[in-house]
Length: 169
Image 1 (cartoon, rainbow, N blue to C red):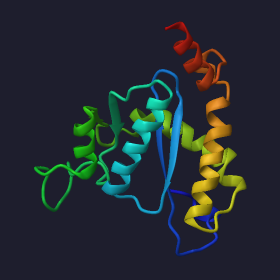
Image 2 (image 1 turned 120 degrees about the horizontal axis):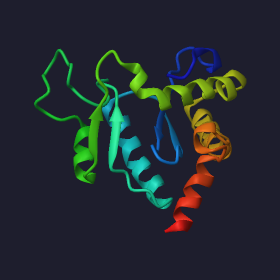
Image 3 (image 1 turned 180 degrees about the vertical axis):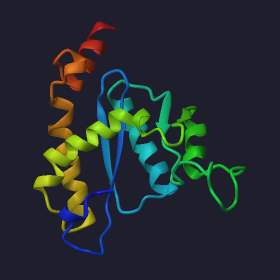
Image 4 (image 1 turned 45 degrees about the horizontal axis):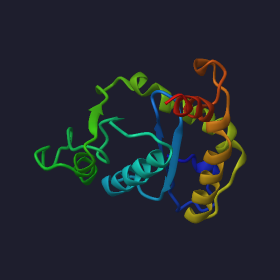
């Protein structure tokens, strides 16, 4: 959820979806005005295409147990019918790993990246519409996080790690 303090219209709700490659830490972000299974499925389609252009095949997606991903803990309807997101995972042959409930630490890379987003992006930006947010988020993802050196990567950026890996093939 995008912090309310940086949204000009009090009626507007904005959401950032985040995916991080386990090996290179290359990160993909997308903006949505609704947090639902349709948005998650759309994000998955964009994610698969974005990583594919960079030579990465998405094999597994790890999510929390939110209703935008699964009906696992739904009080209505049960879990017998898959969500749109789960159907898209099956269509792409992607494994879906669910984080055990009440263990947010298992989503650590995403949580740490959100903290960085709050420091570097949300603390200094204001969004006036969904289109404005989407445009600013895309620019931020392109120039900032993926080019920032990280200690776990030997002080290389995610882009450098991916480029080094692809050139070694």
